[in-house]
Length: 496
Image (cartoon, rainbow, N blue to C red; front, side, top):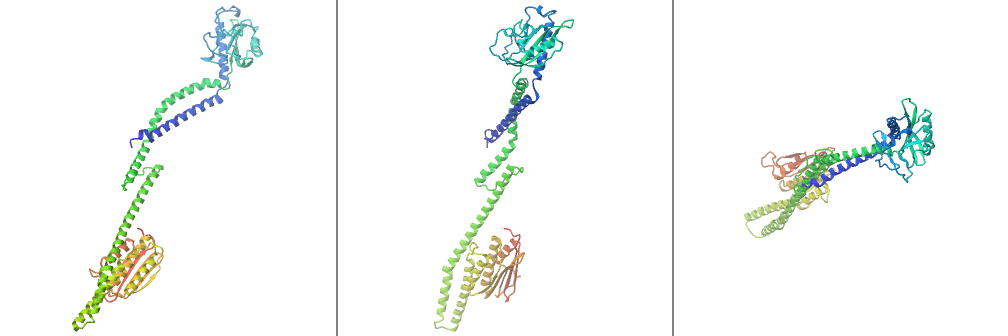
């Protein structure tokens, strides 16, 4: 039970962590794609290009020259330290990064570019002099770029326009240079490559989102692990209790029960375990009762055989010897004594045979209740010469009720045969909608039920059987008038 930290509990906690991480990753991916697809477009790039052109125009104006051709020789457009490659784009503050490129890239992909042009559209300064040197025309970039500059010369500047150059699509902006007379002395032309669809959004927002998601994962993973261990603590504890109870039950401790804490799947398992334990205990109890009953039946069979093989045979032999003595000459007093002995032996033999019938085991495994009672009645009629009239019409009953009725009927017939010296017995087993009634009557010598010694062990057992099943036991008798036994049991509601 100490394996919880590297057993089910740890696996469940790690599952929680894995599910949490996976959900966060999926959420980040959906968020980045959603932002890229639905929230960002080239507007952000257009604004940056416009800001860059305006900023560079301000730097040129800050040189304090009235003519752009008079700019100092060291004036550069762009950043010589930039390593920006063709087709790539980078941002600095709210502007596009403009690299100062001294070589000519063989790659035809567009680069971020800034040009200072005069009102005639001639390049005065360039961030990419290798491809667009001073003295060249802005028209070499694209006809659209030249049109933008010409519109600006005419006083109608247009910015943030997509231009299709030979190297690829770009977003372009033109910013005028205004002197103190407010007359433009030149223009700054800036363009930047348009990345593939939503690549700009991914670069602007995707990376920060992914980085923040990574930080969140680093924080969430240990929290998820702790949460998983705490969340599974109660569950694992319940499973441990159930496992201990199962182990003890398997080792023979059938008193084990587990508390049912919640009505969930484990609660159902706990309930089923308790029900199984109750059923096993009931089965063991039934087996013990059956074993005890079989032992009693076996003992009765053994006693019956011993009595039949020894005492019963000896009694028969004594009767035969006494009968032979009647043929010998003798005095009347001796003959009278022999007659008395013969009568006594006859009664003893009769009672012995009745006792043997009483000890004979009867079971209902192969017979119906009415057939088993009829078999007992026939045995007494054949072996003891007692007329037994039986009217048996029982309803379907539980097995334990049938067994009790069989024992009561057998004991009642045996009492009439052994103690009442009856010649005729009437037996009926009938039922109505709610009650089954067993009635036994004999024409024997009868007795006084009010006497303290009237109820022997057999009568007490019959009463206990009837009352134990929720029924009633009634005995009527008087000296010389026989006896009547009446047992009533409820048809419904009888329980073991």
